[in-house]
Every structure is written in structure tokens, then in C-alpha cells.
Image (cartoon, rainbow, N blue to C red; front, side, top):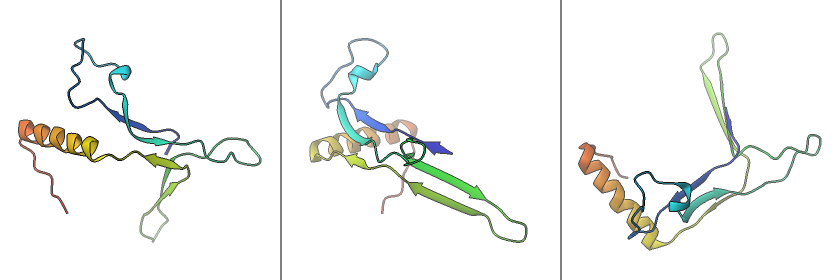
Length: 102
């Protein structure tokens, strides 16, 4: 299984969605995104961001290989991550779910 592009975005903390259904333009704060990477010299195809391979041979244990092939940029600001933590706590409270923290 391969994933070629990934982008994680959020809205601003005090942003109110003007319509009932959120749209991509409502999420302006970029948290994580993949960059292009170097294309393969023979095919010209850029690498996948994430490739996961599962294999099992007779008489051997299953093996899972995970390969990260693209540069990835993480945008960090304390305000953004505090906002995400607040949202996560509200969702946990609504769903009565606890997530173990390290």
C-alpha cells in the first residue's frame, strides 16, 4: 500500500465555519505536508510518501516493512498544537474515550 501525498490542516482557533459543512478552504493552517522528492531516474515518477509492505513466508513470521520516501515538512507553533490538544480533549470528553499519553 502506498500513499503519495499527505497534507494535514486545521482551522484557526476562533474561526467559525460560515456554512453547515466545512470545505477545504476553511482549513488554512498547515500542520504537515509532503514535498516533491527526487523522481526515479528511469521512470521519472516521484517516490511515495509512505509505502507499507506485508509479507509472510511459509514457516516464517510475518514481516511488515514501512518506508518513508518523500521529504515532509511539519509546521510547528505552540498556539496551533495547544489548539489541537484542546480539540482532542473536547472530542475525548464527548466520546468518553481516554487516550494513554507517554
